[in-house]
Length: 206
Image 1 (tube, rainbow, N blue to C red):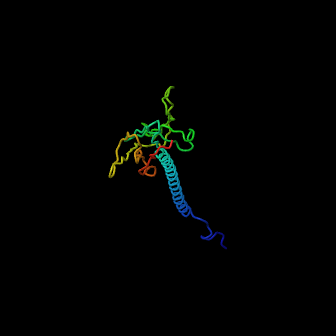
Image 2 (cartoon, rainbow, N blue to C red):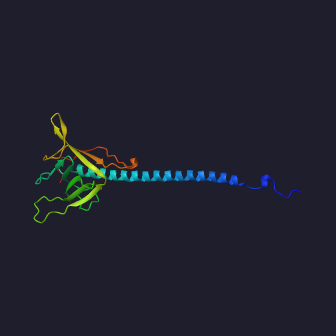
Image 3 (tube, helix red, strand yellow):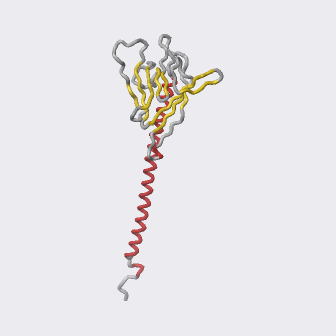
């Protein structure tokens, strides 16, 4: 009479348990690496979407500001000061700005020492101010900008040319804007700005 169990009924041996644990460990490592890769890809995509959103918003603001560059008033000639790395002019702010609709404002676009692409603006006055200096408001359009380059198209008979400064009594026919971003460590965080060419209006409208 047999009192023991056969080998097939004796359960797992210590060696079989160890092999199973090793296989299970490899599966957990593979799963952890997959989750980590997925999280990195998700975070990179989120940063890219956020950066793209900032660029799109800045693109719309610049096209509105420069596109509505004031060519002057009947009693107030235009005040356009264009330089290679900055531009100042009179225009209208985009809809939603903290100023009454269709109020002309004097603006300037430049990059400050903290690598922020900034918009400075103040309401435009046709007459000479008798009170103190106006309050200049500052809005950061983009962070992490190394520099901005402007160029201005000067028409001429038979053609024209791009120039790096503008002090004309009328707006340039075209304004070219290039933004250069500060270098970032990760390639997924790097931003690229396509060259913008904007045509300011050239007929007085206000």
